[in-house]
Amino acid sequence: MQLPDYEVFALRYARRDARRPEHFVGGDPHDAPMPMDYFVWLIRNGERTFVVDSGFTAEVAARRKREYLRAPKAALALLGVRAEEVRDVIITHMHYDHVGTLLDFPRALFHIQDDEMGFVTGRYMRHARFAHSIEVEDVVGMVRMLFKGRVVFHKGEAELAPGVSLHHIGGHTPGMQSVRVHTKRGWVVLASDATHYYEHFEAGRCFPTVVDIGRTLEGYDTLRRLAESPRHIIPGHDPLVMARYPAVSKELEGIAVRLDVMPA
Ligand SMILES: [Zn+2]
Image 1 (cartoon, rainbow, N blue to C red):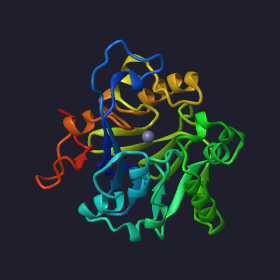
Image 2 (image 1 turned 90 degrees about the vertical axis):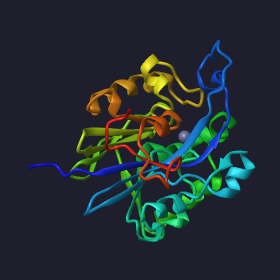
Image 3 (image 1 turned 120 degrees about the vertical axis):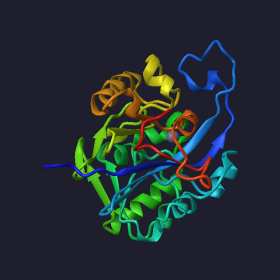
């Protein structure tokens, strides 16, 4: 059977300035700027629409001193997607920058790994080292969704539709999952924070916010195995994504790029 092709987009909703030593376990000898972008992703074709992650709110942005460019919902609207009508939101992991704004998706099911829900409701949240990246209101919000029957649990690999599948990577968080999508240029992998920047998987280095370094490094092999080529792997926070891929339109420059075409 011929697999359907999907369009895939990265939508940038926030950013912050940072320096190289902040982004690597063990620091970095080069104290140069290395800003961070924050994304949600959109997968769609004539039949199905999937939103990948839900970003954070303006309130959280202000508290954590992130530069908020627009609400994820507003970014989606620029691509003609009404958040109110979205049926499937994939949550790659429960960090605050990936799972805020749940209430903006009143009809959606939320797809998450078993291990991630266990992580954010379990003993590791006693430790600021791990809890710092989690908003308790996001966890409570997800529990409310659970009791409304709107959470879909996955354990390992799962096909959501022909050509769209989830892959448990772990490492960064225990339930970290990446998304594989069939496009006209082959299999694209939305790694999310399985690799924050291109440099992490290319150089075998690790972002300092991490639960299991070994699994993170092993995860890079999984991303390579899932993707058509290394140029089909999309990191979770790298400004190079906006630089390498074409804007959806002139009006959406700096806001949304297409990932289903080859990068420059
Ligand atoms: Zn992140």
